[in-house]
Image 1 (tube, rainbow, N blue to C red):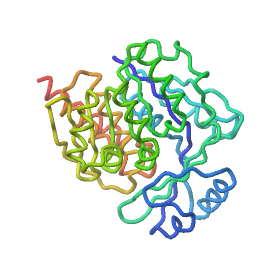
Image 2 (cartoon, helix red, strand yellow):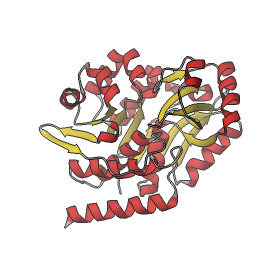
Image 3 (cartoon, one colour):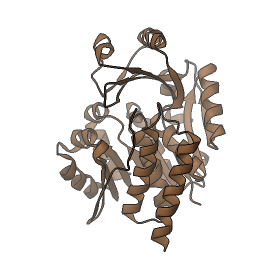
Length: 331
């Protein structure tokens, strides 16, 4: 079985559901965006969320993906930085309970947290992130031995706030012979780091995951044309179009992937789990279309729960559906 290593912001998701966008306006948060906040603002928002009831789920985009690949049975590791506090201890134990090999360094600040507003009938998610110790991960923390023995290396786009860190990480991953994938993260992150993203994708990245707004921010084109441009710059490009499905392309090979049926209540983590399913199937040598379908199956399970943690019955159902799909390919 091939193995995967991820790197990302070690953040605990703090989730709360609201009927409309009133609260977003109060904190000047554009719907669907990810905004960084300072400790004081973060504490104020956290207190406000507690009033409506919150759910705590260890997360961060890459960690969500790596947790899922581990549950699929892929040997999986994660690099990040946490604080010496309750959220940090919870974070480490949660990843390790899922079978992830953690390289979690300890910073001087408190552990990072992503406060997530889930709003409206379409369960759109908007994040206010206090990064804390997660931001203290620096290039000097990385060691070649972290990458040894891994076949895949997965990066979350949110890390581009530290371009030197990403640059060193992808260089080490390339030297270790890894296939490198990136999830673009958020349209506003792509917009504010456009030149760096282009350089990274064209030089280092093999597999790119983007949703339609991220693909548009990167290419200035609509999803189908954006996919074509991305596929010219890397080996495999994936553009997800929400409830309408996804598109995958490698060279001249193109597939539209229908969405898997789901009773959506919260879209948090859908992209992260899609990436996990895709990479898991890719590691098994599955055809491109099947990789997309496996991504679609597992993403359909996470949108049926609040947060990014899929429950055991849904995991069992997903694994059975994926087993049947792969068996049909293997004949």
